[in-house]
Picture 1: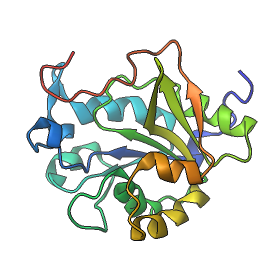
Picture 2 (picture 1 turned 90 degrees about the vertical axis):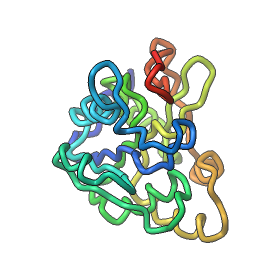
Picture 3 (picture 1 turned 120 degrees about the vertical axis):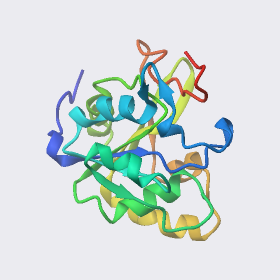
Picture 4 (picture 1 turned 45 degrees about the horizontal axis):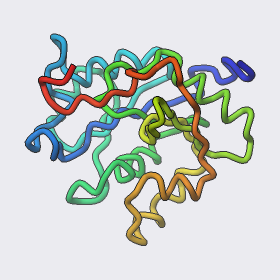
Length: 195
């Protein structure tokens, strides 16, 4: 693929989103839920860490649990669980690399080459600030690679009432990257009984 391995790991910061309210799992912290013998966040962290220079975790509770991963923990600047963009906004000031790789804590099967496949798409489309995964006809906006400079527009977007990730992405000329061989890689685990 054109652009493969264009971005060294140390130029990418990872952000694992674990700061949600957990509405679909009885308001529990999804990152702490067990799946195949380990907490969900442990699976996602293990997939993300080799792809980036460092990982940050967006978490708004259970900081003691997340300390086990030995990385920087970021809490939202806004109150009342205002969504993943609020977590991204809080992390923006801590990202000192050119790129940020984003993933939720409840996707334990992330592709091991997610970052580089998304990076190849950005290299091929210089006008785009964000590339995100698409698999089996579904967009996975929270599995994305972002150019660091575009994060500065998050504050005004949120201040004006914006919350939808797809709407902010549209303002950033985001592009979808097909993962046709990864149908189950982006499966969200929303209960302890999920596969």
